[in-house]
Length: 356
Image (tube, rainbow, N blue to C red; front, side):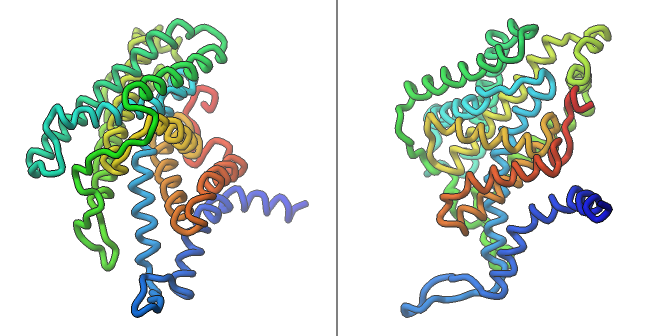
């Protein structure tokens, strides 16, 4: 029995790291030894033996994962404070994309707009999209969730699903049922600079460059401000927080406002990065982002960011290496199941009342 117990302890400590590293390490060795096709010359394949392709997979994954991370934070904030899975959150992100694209013409943004006008215009679009989505999320909480705060948990859960369908239909009426191409304002595929032979494109810089300050700003707010401390106190024990003079209802509304605002920011980044929008985009994005929140540790902001980045990298490897992406969802959720088996509270651990 001792070898079995030792193996279980060893797998619990190192098995998860080995599993997460397996995919990039395998393809790293493959690219250095077997090589990969980098083009054709006179009808003959050009084989390279370097780390450029795997580096591109990682950078693409981190940029995609930055979007999932911003959405995942909204899930983890709401669950951490009232233990509700806000299934409408992905569709709030969709409304954010639609709002951002609708504001392009309001601020006169086109692919020919100058650099200064584009920067200030997109900053204005970002702020307005965050306000719209934050206000929408707060309205949903006030109308749908607040009256059910003392009800069985199934009631607000079904209400969240209902709001999700309502927002999907709003998007359907707003911009139609087909995926819609939108102007590529930033020329997102243009290479800005190279790291060795690895091209760094504008889209990568945008996604990662917007996500990092928003996450650091949120972390500072939650840890260092009075309202942030009220959020943490409410998440730990709402009744004790109320006895200490904290306005719990106002704090919960603030949490929804912040989560919705981050979803609005993600909506703009998505529209600029993917250059297409669709009324159904929130369903898949919401599912992936919630998976990221669970993977990192529900209620844990850093865990949501880590989970989003990891899923982005897994998706990038799968899309680029495994049958054109047909197995991507299976690979992502296979990793989720593995992480839940080896570490049920997520990579960085849950931060909820039940977890302690």
